[in-house]
Length: 113
Length: 111
Image: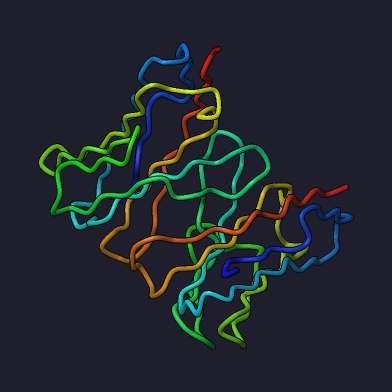
């Protein structure tokens, strides 16, 4: 089955630690996205990537970093500089940047303890 | 800036009744408008979408209408069922190739 896989489903982080969220897709999509979801605020764009070795900041990139070394993978690192990292993180992909339907993964819930 | 507003934030209907969720967008260059359904603890799933050259689209019990002049689009669910209970998000694909999402509507279908 084709799709987007995010792991882990739940993640706990101590304050001051960096943590990396995994996102893998086997849809052969060029574009990938990371969103943050907080209650009552919808989905906000953190970073997006149009193609391998290219990525751009979204609306709330501060405190986050990404890489796109392979077409299938777009990991997100939540750094210690992110002041309020507890949230639900969603990865998505689409065939090309801004083309039609974006497919979402099942999300990772990050909690800072 | 680019923005999508969604109303209402919560909606309760009796089973069998219709539900309507409305969104407005600011970017006149937006040309694609998907609707997603999100169940608790899961990622959003596309349920229907519409392009800017179409005014209405239907798929069984769900339909979407688009008014480009007024920059608003709506989701209509008829004959609602308990399994329709979820959070629904509208989105617009802007001229800068970003998906901008509304803040979501929590739909409760009461049996």
